[in-house]
Amino acid sequence: MTHEYIHETRLSQPREQVFAWHERPGALPRLTPPFGGGPDQVRQAPSDGIEPGSEAKLGVSVPGTFGMVHLPWTAEHGEWDPPHYFTDRMAKGPLGEWEHRHVFEETESGGTLIRDRVTVRPLPQWAGKLNDLGERVMTPQLNRIFAYRERQLKADLAFHEQHDGPRLTLAVSGSSGLIGSQVCALLETGGHTVVRLERGGSTGEGVIGWDPDRGLLNPRDLEGIDVVIHLGGESIATRFTPEKKREIMDSRVDSTNLLVRALGQVPAAKRPRALVVASAIGYYGTGRGDEVLTEDSTSGEGFLAEVCREWERAAHGAAAHGVRVVNVRTGLVLSPTGGMLKPQLPLMEAGLSGPLGGGQQWQSWIGLDDMAGAIAHLALTEDAEGPFNVAAPNPQRQKDFAKTVAGVLHRPAVVPTPLAGPKAVLGTEATEELVAASHRVDVSKLLASAYRFRHEDLRGCAQHLLGRGH
Image (cartoon, rainbow, N blue to C red; front, side):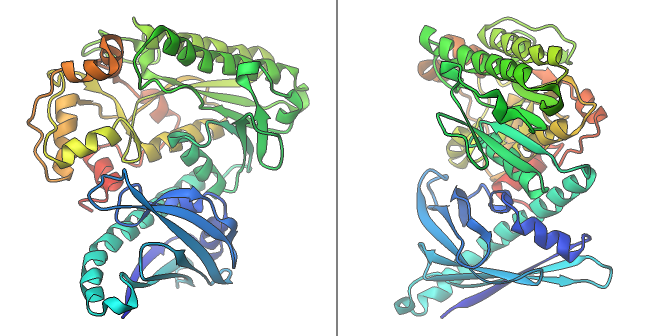
């Protein structure tokens, strides 16, 4: 027996605009929730948009594995009648049957009503009435998934309405990473063209091949690009051995120097107008305590502060070529699928989280959607220039951060963890700079640039990312 699930979303935007958003590359990653209970990992984007025969490959997290174990899911698009409806079904996957019909209707006010109609059989046909039990288990998960999709769609459409200037062509490095993939998806759903800078790849449609390790990038490939966004770099979540330190530093500074040299060789009339480069609030170093840190605060002590200084110095070289330069000093990015939150979730779910190293250190956090949104905003805002602290306006002490996120999961956060634990894994230096550092950053400059946060408070952000409490 199959069961039917219906979710309705009302939007102020006209139907043609809303349907066009769904047709663009990036729609699937933007609508895919990062929590379990449904497809929560895009492994392959749709091969041909939402047209019939287009396929996408996703992963479904197994309940109880905290997103660490996924089962494959292949979605195939079927009937399609723009701007009225399109359909997709599970061609391969863990359920007995799944078909999703997306219907778009005009409202009397000129807006749009989206009616998502899902026909689902949780188990194979022979399971009989066990499917009724499966339906009762799935319904709360579907409520979470479609509530998330509705919030994402409304926020993304509002972002694009705010940034309604000419559509641009942007080159993005680190496009497959946690942040870069969402930056690309957000820009693409707004009608911008994204060209991905891929290491070791060959230049072709939608791709610029480059090799920072060998200093290879053809300046001609940057002709006609409006903005370059550079997000790549070796992971810092590791022991700071001499070898790793070199890799962390060189992967950022050398690649940025290569981009700046290439920009200088592009004819002025065809040169990108802006270079947006990642940095981090690690720029302010260790030992800052309760100090409120603005973009004018001095850089601090420690290896990561040195990396950020050199990284930003390299990027500023593009200003000599008339290029607008933005340094994105990123805060602690929150997502169940990566960043600092992912490794904490199993402990939080088990009720074993709490103050870390005393819990007094300030954590300047930011949700993944706001991080992607802020980077896209700074790329599209022509008068944004120089360093920007990119974090939510309300930093938390670590003990309060743990209590709030664990509270969203309905778990306590009272188990203290000494720094000896992280030190055993990361070593003393990395622990002091990654775990114990206190950064209380001020984001007035970002707010003054007219960026509109989706989530200014931690509880609301955690509820959205974890699909709880809404």
